[in-house]
Image: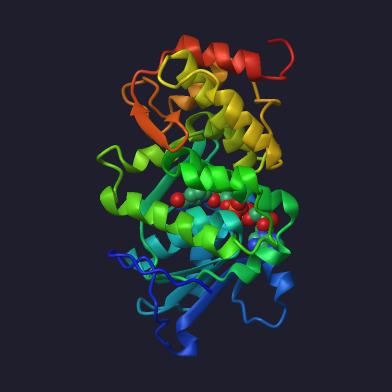
Length: 338
Ligand SMILES: NC(=O)c1ccc[n+]([C@@H]2O[C@H](COP(=O)([O-])OP(=O)(O)OC[C@H]3O[C@@H](n4cnc5c(N)ncnc54)[C@H](O)[C@@H]3O)[C@@H](O)[C@H]2O)c1
Ligand SMILES: [Zn+2]
């Protein structure tokens, strides 16, 4: 088990004992099946489709039916979907009750459980309803990773690689020299490194008002649009972000922000780690651009992206030209008729 303590206390070294009755544990059906002896109070359908209003309402109703009190603690045991959904329910039920994250996927351990963002999706866009609501504790146990299907492990790897690309050249080089697996001896240290990288950025810009935190969104402006346009079903979040990182590094090159050949190098690294670099993007490029304009970083209908300038560094770029985005998406897409 890794315990990391940050100044904001997102992670606590000590796990304070509570009365058992104070907990209300929520998980999804896959995780529940893996731990049949665990007392769980609510089991939800696995998958991104659970991160919606219907399931939010289901969670809130379950809390109310179980007479969960203001001083009770909700435990989100699962991947990013459970963490985001349950965290948002905890943030709003009785105007906010304690919650603890126990992330069970690689993605949730290195990314979604860090930084206090919770929320749900709308058909119009991902995470369009939500809150900043840090959990009181995050308990990261890397043993959960052992049961992850390979595709889900790679999904988390996309975020791990993203940290290398935007913040940590040494991490990227390490992952390219020896790709990480669930059995790697470096797994715990890589997870801890990613948590620290993200926690440092979050501490410098907790509410994403200074432009620092938005840098973590490399690959996500295009990636989220792909997820929306493919109905959140074709790709895992990490796969969509992999496609997004390819597109956005290419955009950076075409804009002259990144050195030539960077996108090619990134693609080689992503392929090596089993992630997609081409594929169906869910529609024509102009439709994707419309979805990107709903992105929370977008300002007055302009495209704002976190773009990698070289491996290990990135900058937030405003006014990314639509024509460049359309050109890159047209070249990358396997969608028919483009
Ligand atoms: N809040 C944030 O800051 C933030 C950051 C990044 C991503 N996210 C969100 O996280 C979500 C993606 O998270 P995810 O990739 O963890 O998806 P997920 O929660 O859907 O989990 C992926 C799959 O793995 C299964 N699973 C979970 N733990 C397992 C285990 N230990 N063994 C076997 N199977 C297991 C789940 O049942 C599911 O089928 C997206 O909704 C994304 O928007 C949020
Ligand atoms: Zn992500």
